[in-house]
Length: 233
Image 1 (tube, rainbow, N blue to C red):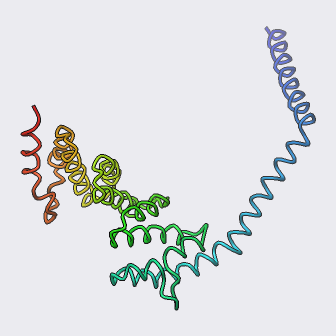
Image 2 (spheres, helix red, strand yellow):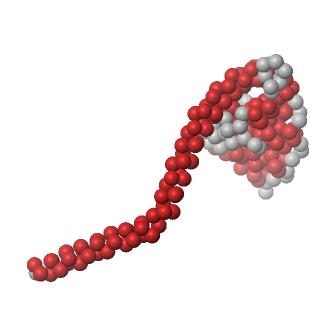
């Protein structure tokens, strides 16, 4: 029995030694490319840190200061100046988006550019800028998706609009979800798809999302349900 155990231990040791030998052989054979890869990773990380600390972060601070001026124009309803600048303190959202690349402010500037074009009734330009954005913030997500949907409604394309309203309705904000579900339903109705419209309205009703009163589309949910249901066999 003792001999058997000793044989098993010897076999295990040989297996371990073999594995170590294989690892050593692999390392020796691939030592140069492995070292090159490791050095490349270190260099890339170091360069990124330098770029971030010496370029991106300072530019971010500068862009934030510039953006605050533009946001004031936007809030005051001066959308054209918000877009094109005032030739004094603010270059315009379009310029900020182009001149401050790699910063969050540049992404935000594109959102404001799209919203400004929407307010001015330039819906195709609005879509163009809003579709360039990639902000992950929930408020920005549903604002961008919902506004693109509104643009397509204004352009008479309800089929395309509904896609964006459904995306906007994925928001975590319970005040926002029912509004975009109803907008999606209205688009389905406009396209003649009453079954899908009814599905949107009933999602609001059954999910008790209609409890958020004060929003016309939501307050009239029963009327929308009845209207869509009348067209569904």
